[in-house]
Amino acid sequence: MDNMGGIGNVPYTMILDLTNNTTDLGGIIFILSHEINHQIYDSTSSAELFKQTVLYRIINEGFATFISYLYWGHKYSIAKNLGYSEKEYKWCLDNQKLIWGIVRPLLSSTKNDDINKLVARNIKLFENAPGAIGYYVGFKICVEYVKRNGKSSWKNIYKEPVDMVLFKVAYLKISGRNINYFTVLLFKSNKYDLDSFTKPC
Ligand SMILES: [Zn+2]
Image: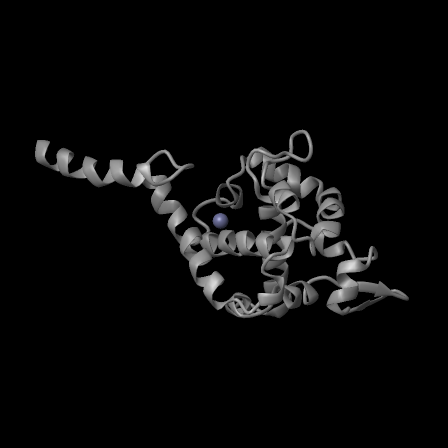
């Protein structure tokens, strides 16, 4: 028993030294699928034009969250996968229009300040909101993408340019009809159909 304890403690300590936001081995194992997905996505994504944008960053985080949720077979809640408390996640579900209203004009931005606003854990845009609210939006975009394109379509996200991912999720309502809209206009338009962002996952 003594030997086992000694052996177990060595790598445990070393791994902890290399991470900032986990406190135990279980936490490190839990985030591996999320982190590995970043590695894969960064190397497979064809979104060269968009890689510096807010949109790319939040889809990258949301997709990693989505994959982690799938990988663990839904064993852990969406909130835990997002790094939120259950209460913070509930706040997101209750305030989707508000969130989308803040995020939408930033999507094409390449400014670090705008990216941080949405992915930094210590930045809360609203009282009771979680930090890193862009994780939620990116996750939601992936969920909606899969809903519209089929159960296995998450595999396409690896290669689908992020503007196309959004293109396939967001619709513009013209004369009461949902119409797919071109990316450039999508970025500039204020007339998104908010329906898909106002229903719980
Ligand atoms: Zn991440």
